[in-house]
Image 1: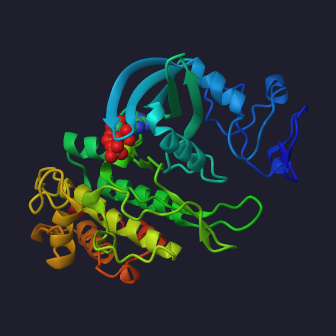
Image 2 (image 1 turned 120 degrees about the vertical axis):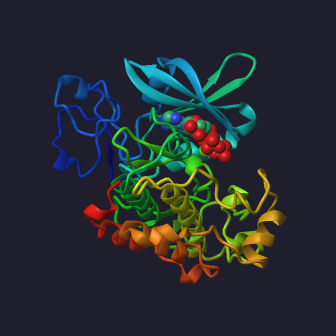
Length: 363
Ligand SMILES: Nc1ncnc2c1ncn2[C@@H]1O[C@H](COP(=O)(O)OP(=O)(O)OP(=O)(O)O)[C@@H](O)[C@H]1O
Ligand SMILES: [Mg+2]
């Protein structure tokens, strides 16, 4: 364990209150279990706290995973479904060309106190050299329902389902954005690539925010951001107007959070369209599907979002249901042109959590 910044080997079972931290139980089959099981095995392993599993353990896990099938392909490589000791895991495989992205994503996931039920659970990172090239692995929890984009394409959601999805994304984003002060604290983090493809749907129909490879952390003591920022790094379709017209003040960390909130508004629009009230629902569409081509350029987006000041349209029938009405209002307040006028993730979370779903809205 880490004690005054030094790593120590824990030789006896320590109680959780004594540790004041998260413990990864190595005896349990489920590596992401965060309680000590108080068996002997627990005591003879180096627990490196609080940054995640010791590197050797991460490597051992990664090298005993059996890959099953490929589940997706993104900008930085492939995502596989794998099995580790009978458990499902997801493995994102980067090519050696994308080593920086692999390193950055692993680094962000291992930020102190980042773990949250609505943020994808990180398990391990490993670099494996096969003699010819290096394979870079990032192992995380596996969610068989896939991304929110896949989920919304597959079917519709009930009003309760919509509220649960929306609330869970807001909770994950509020946790990411929040700074927790103290020795066991966490820096504020902005995602910078929030979109329905980077949000996973868990078995209980709540979301986990994934793909933290482009995220930036705020050091509130020095008031600095941890990496040099190229503001135009996310997905063009979801970029806030100030990013599209190069007007974002990248010296202020709040700017990055506000840009995430704009993207959140678009994700809410995608969810709300699939909500079925009285049998009425809309087909799945990406935001701005009717205004820009399929792989829009910055210029395509800038014309629509900044010049014409257009936003996704809000159907009239949303007025007939309280939850949809509230979500519609939240979206508008998330995608305002001025970043400073947008809501915070915490405000969005609070508003949605106050929503009760009345009988007349049920599908
Ligand atoms: N932990 C996971 N569990 C289950 N499926 C996953 C997991 N992570 C990713 N996927 C699936 O793999 C797909 C590819 O993910 P990836 O992040 O590489 O690309 P993307 O999000 O589709 O595009 P981009 O490169 O723009 O981020 C996702 O869309 C999702 O369907
Ligand atoms: Mg992704």
